[in-house]
Amino acid sequence: MEEKTRKVYILLTRSNTSFSQLIYKVTHDQFTHSSIGLEGPGEAFYSFARRHPRLMLPAGLIKERVAGGFYAIHPTVPCRLYELEVTEENWQYIRRKIDAMYPEHRHYRYNLLGAFTAYAGKTLERPHHYFCSEFVAECLVESGAAVLPNPPGLSHPIDFTTIEGEKLLFEGEIGQLARQVAAPTAVL
Image (cartoon, rainbow, N blue to C red):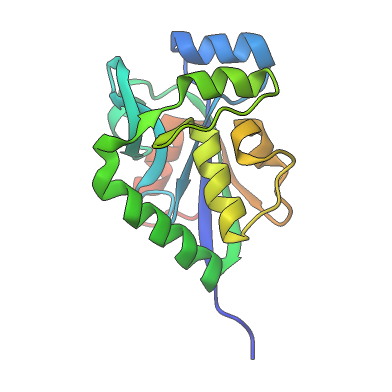
C-alpha cells in the first residue's frame, strides 16, 4: 500500500528593503527571505519578518500571503515558489509545530543577531527567536521532510533551492504569482 503524501510550499523572495539589500551585499545570494506554507500557493505562508508591511520593526513570527501585506505594496519583488512532496507524518509534524507556535506569535521575535552570526558561520540560538531561514529549515529538518546543506541556525534562503525532489512551480515577480494563484483555473 502506498503511503499518503502531502505538499509543502517554500517561497523565496528578495525585496528592496535596507535589510534585504544588506544581506544581498554580504552573500550575493539571489534570495534573502524564505517562508513555508502547507495549504497551497494562494494560502498562508509562515516566516519570521516584519509584523507591519511599512515598518521594519517589530519583527517576529508572521503569516503572509503572496497577494497581501508587504507583497501587495511591493509586487515587483522577485520570487521563486517550490513544492515539496512529503509524507503525511512530515506534513503533520510541521502543521503541529506551526499550530503550537502561531497562537503565541507575539512572544516570538526575529533573531537579528542570529542572522548576522549565521552569515559569519556561527550559530546563535535564543529562546523564542528565529530568523526566516532558520525557522523554515527547522520545520523541514526536524520533521524529516528534507536534508539541507547547513543546520537550521546556519541556513540561508538559497539553501532551499537544493532540496532533493522539490519542484519549481514559479519564478518571477510576486505580483505575477499573486495573479496566477488568484485566477479561478490557476495551474502552477
